[in-house]
Image (cartoon, rainbow, N blue to C red; front, side, top):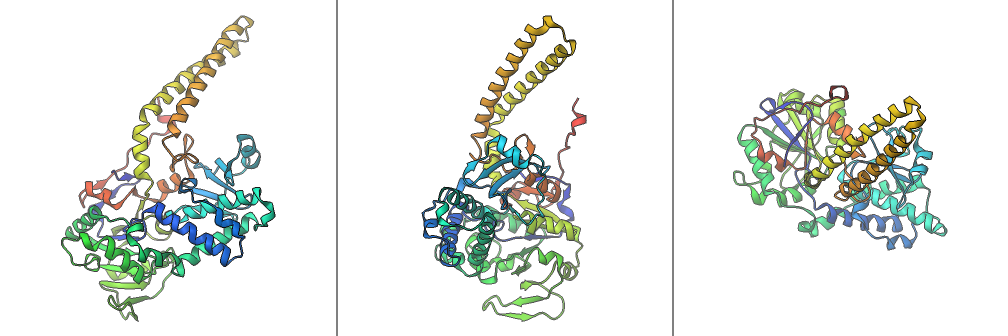
Amino acid sequence: MTILVNRTLDMKRIWAIGFDMDHTLVRYKTENFERLTYHVLIDKLIKQLGYPPEVKSLKFDFQRTIQGLVIDSLRGNIIKLNCFGKVKTAYHGLQQLTFRKQQKIYRNLVIDLADNNIWPLDSSFSLTHGILYAQLVELMETKPDLKLPSYTQMASDLITVLDSAHCDGSLKDQVRKNIADYIMPSPTMVGVLERLKRHGKKLLIITNSDYNYSKLLLDFSINPYLKEHKCWSELFELTITASEKPNFFTQKRRFLQVDEKSGLMSNVDGPITSGIYQGGSAQQLEHDLKLTGEQILYIGDHIYGDVVSIKKTCNWRTALVLEPLEQEMVSLKRVRPVQEQIDKLMEQKGRLELKLNQLFTNEDEKDRKTIDTVLAQIEKINQDISGQIGSYQGEFNPYWGEVMRAGQEESRFARHVEKYACIYMSSISDFDSYTPYTYFRPVKRVLPHEIL
């Protein structure tokens, strides 16, 4: 696979590379993990928050949500935004809004992500939130006698039980019991890490997960494939657990040192050195490693916690891991002939529309027959385009299409990736095709006025 470039990044100038753990260093079997999360959340909704037992009858549908969507909890909708904040696709429950209804609700709105009623679904861990929200809204509309909470309260309740599941061991205990069902082995990635280390890069882990869970996952996914090190803790100069990102990048807090064998913590006097820590701050990390922000590359999967927060507060270089890209790039190659046909039809349509404008401008009655002919030709092309678009969309998510597109425009999520991630990829293993000294350069973007 390919590493995609938004801004120039000279790896010769990078002295330290930091990694998030979940969905970055450690790749989950996402559908399996989200299915587990789904059933844990349903159980918590019923037992902890008093939801009716009928919620138990809901069925997991992994396709229902993709990264980059937004919950509009005021109206009970899940929406996909273009790069200008306009709604391009909307579902109420499991029903797609008609174009007319969508326009009636959203035509005059630009969605503000700072609005308290707006909940972005931007990380891999947020997929179940979207799936369950859509199903709960559908259940509310089809069975009003169940007396489910309001749209806004349901969105909030899902965050409550999701946070609870991640904190109280409900999910981690299941992963611990059946780790091979939820975590993917990554031998290629381990080879990439050892090569980076061999060429003098300091490797760091900065994760929000606690030490014991981090050790479990890293022991499983990295240790069996090491060739030049005995353990992942030798491979990484520093491992920082329970970092509380994005606060790690914005607040100054103390580091605690973690004993690798017992997991017990102790205060740190003086600068941090190699080892395992908890908490801390990016500011102290830079100071103690004697590095500037531009000498550190951080790689994570969360567009806000791992990328946007860094760009807004630190001067670190950033990379985003976007797992859906792996399948989407395969699909994009497959539909390239379809896209070429759509482009060709659009060119034909444009020429006919120009001809039509000229005929209307002349306002000559004898052109009426020609106008009717041109209109019929345009309608035929529209039908052909619709058929081609159907073939194109059939290669992607059946409800939402591509992650990085909203129709012909960039999606809101894609614009954030472009703005804040220096590079992006589907997996750390994508570095396998590049040397540790690669100079990543973006392709020149063609602006509309440059198309001649």
